[in-house]
Length: 382
Image 1 (cartoon, rainbow, N blue to C red):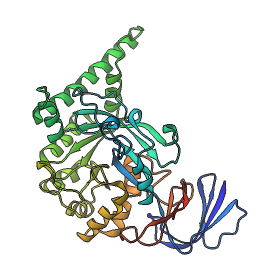
Image 2: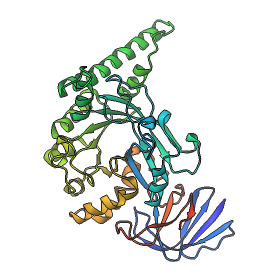
Image 3: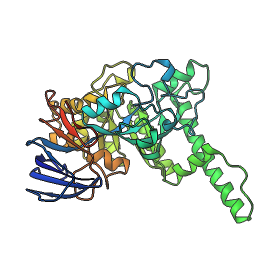
Image 4: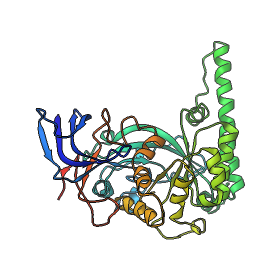
């Protein structure tokens, strides 16, 4: 299908705003200019609305604990053992979660869906795009895009209650390190079999994932709130040479020098929620300003359902209220998470050659009175 969006204020995110038209052919942006004249299947009159790329929530549990279903559909954590590296969030994803539609009304059209944080090694996440389909496959942008790990209070609480290890931060660190050391041994066994022209008969799914981590093919997303846990994540990156991002990073201000030096991206948030546990004691919107001022790669996240994804933009707006640069906060919902997730060649900005992941707004997305009036999946929204 070929369609033309006319008469809009276009914010490409990576360039200055312009007023004009956008031509899309078969889901790809082909032309951005003023007064485009082209034979198309559909013309959309934007009526001077603001055209933005769909927002990207780089840390979500959407579809794993769908709204209104209760325990029966809560598939956020497979907390039966400390290491569940081989479980896949996509196998628990429920397309009928009402939050998916609500998220689109708040401009969020792409998610990175992760298992929860009860386990030191929690499982594989995936990247999804908004769809009205009932089929999980229609949501998928990238299967098994990362692996989730967790430190601190959550795994301590989960396994102490079971009278199992880990019950301390030391135990959590030990389990994660031993998994990666076992992965190194597994790689060597494979190499030895290959060298001796033997069939490798010790296939282990968890170790296959460890191999991808150690070969830097699979990034590690580490749940960390407190400064101590953030520093552990940085040590782990340095010890094993793996790709790491720090999830939540609540105490960023305390360890900003170390995070800056490590060049590790951080997924900041959610902040628009209560301080429901000790690790959130120093939670503050000033973290966003700190990341911007120190030029630390970051993304603004919802952690849905901890914080409702539909209002992710308002959390970014509150960060602006606390001194964060407005332009940078827009990037934290678009191009920055796209870069961190490795999908920026197709998503995160409005540029020729990128996908039509688009929303029309009737005002600034940081204003609570504004709303999405059109997106490329639903069309016009009442």
